[in-house]
Every structure is written in C-alpha cells, then in structure tokens.
Image (cartoon, rainbow, N blue to C red; front, side):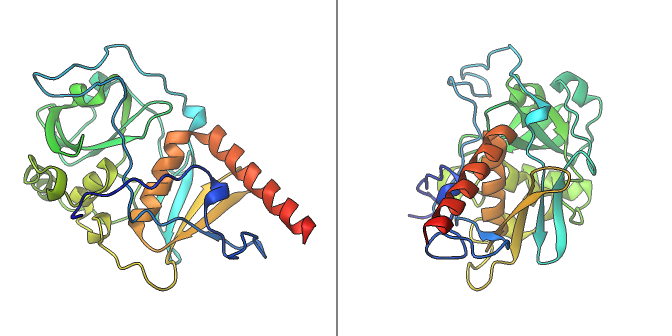
Length: 271
C-alpha cells in the first residue's frame, strides 16, 4: 500500500470511541479520539479549481469566510501546550492575498481559509511565492494563485515549538518540490508546512508509534468556561481531527457535541 492511504470516513463525535467500550463515558474525563492511520483529508477546493499554468484557474470571486465560525482549540503533549488557536492568544484576522504579501517574510507559514473547506497551509519562500502540498504533489506557486479566492493569514505562532531559521525553512520546502503520490511523507498541507518550519518527525506519516497511552490531548473551547477534550496517540491524528473540525465549523462541531452528550445521557438513563 506504500504511502497511499485509504480514506476512513469519520462523520460525527457520536462515532468517536469513548473510554468505555460500551460507548458510555463513566466520568467527566477526556474521551479517546479516532485513529486516522488509514486516512487523509482533502484540503483542495471543489469545482475543479487548481493552480499552476495550463490547468483550470480558480474562480476570481472571493470565497465566503465567517470568522465567528472558527473552532478555537489547543493541543497538549502530556502537560505541555504545543498549539493554540484562540482569540485570546493569537491574531485570527484574515487578509486578501494581495494585502498579506506586504506582511510575509521568507519562512513564514501561511493559512488559506474559506467556510466549509479544509484550511490550506503553505510556506512562503519569497518573491511572492509559496511551496505547498496540493493534490498529492509538492508545488511551488504564486501566493495569489495558491489562495484560489480564499482569505489568508500568517500562522507562525500557533505551534508553540522552536522554529528553524528562515533559510532552513525555505530550503526544507524547496527541496521537496516535485514530490508526489507515494513519495510523500505528509498527510496534508498543514503537516507538510509545519514540518518545513519546525523539522519535527511527528508531522510525518508514521512519525510516531501508536502504542500505549494517548499522550496528546485536543481541547476544543466550547465557551469561555467550557471545553471538550479528546485524547490521541499521535500528533498526526490530532491534526487530522483538528482540521476536520475546521472544515465543519464551530456551529456544526457544537451541534455534534450536543448530540453526543444527549446520547450518553439517554444510554445512562436506560442502564
């Protein structure tokens, strides 16, 4: 099978395994998240929009994006926070690609966002260009082309890891250009871009052994005082679940959680 991963459908929190094998949470502790070992997400746009010369160009109309539907969350490796996206600790403002170019420096991580789509990550390498994993290939594109009508922002500080120097980040990205399909070591654009910037093997497919206790926790902020926690065996799995939430949006994720807890309460009342 190589690096070709079969898609594992994952439709709702109700389907996520819980600590109790019968599907009932016996306490208020975290639940165990699904393993995405045979899965990859699809962060490309629909409607056949792709980048690069000779292929169909993206629709020039700006894609819809509602910042109020952001899913704010944090990721922990044991007790250490290694990632956080929230209005309290990060600037979630988005810009047009043209305006973002004035802010970008070589080595920056860029995120492209649109409502109802997976976020797409890229490494800015200078000269108005990015390197990114797109359609199972590492490509070098102009930032404005890679955006495909999406809003964008710089996300260097979301992962609380020590970055490599800008020159090495750019080198990491450029050396992978042209890799495709079975040659790839990353499951999605975020994992690839983050590996370029931080150099951690945990961002690669199979970079961690999935055995023993789940050392990673994904904390989804439900409100200022409430959060929901899932545990995972690898950073790779956390990223997949986090991106799934981003794709769904805050409203849909909260609806899933509400349905899950209603189901748990009903099962408890029948016992």
